[in-house]
Image 1 (cartoon, rainbow, N blue to C red):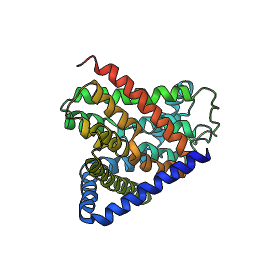
Image 2 (image 1 turned 90 degrees about the vertical axis):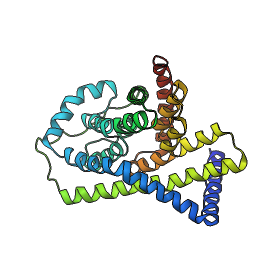
Image 3 (image 1 turned 120 degrees about the horizontal axis):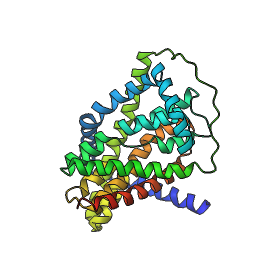
Length: 310
């Protein structure tokens, strides 16, 4: 274990020093890359993510939300051994995407509506991409087909839920006191401020990791790294870039790769999620390992489904 930690620390130190050196050597080039990342965030992520962060924070304090948790509780308890609140977090994540699910998990944990016993399972269950990104951005925008996008979305959810189903075995159900029938008081100014801060954190991660992706591409060209390896590294770093690199030639393999990138999330999305889940008390290394497994399972499912349309 010590050797693994030392190797990881050495690798992180080397990557950090290399990034600093590249920024110092080519400041204009990589500052422009950061600017491009900010533009992508402002044009594609901010308009959809900010309203969802704001609205989901309000929704979790409404009486309707309480009723929704009661409906979901029996099913989620039997299938995933999580509470109705955990099921609601998963539902909100599935319709809205990153990072709404992780932010919802944090909000529910802080308000005492997710127990310590189920926290990790809920985090793995409620960190998904949404149909707007997979169908709209990747399917229609990058691959020119809504059908491909729906295959990606269904495979993505199937991989996540299948792995979470097996996480239930041996797990203890969460024991929480019953929620009051009435909803709590909503401070709209506080909800808006927290939503803005959350989406700014997302934007910062996208901008920085977009520049890191450009660095990997430049190093790959300089060292004549095989294109497939360069694409894999960029996808593991930032999922959108990885998907864009393989989307030009849709096939069962490229769809499966895209599904893996999105389900795992890449280091960029993991950092975004860690900003919320770490504060909730989720152990991040086991979480990243589960996301890697979910990515592999989702990619396999996507490959099999894609064979029916190619």
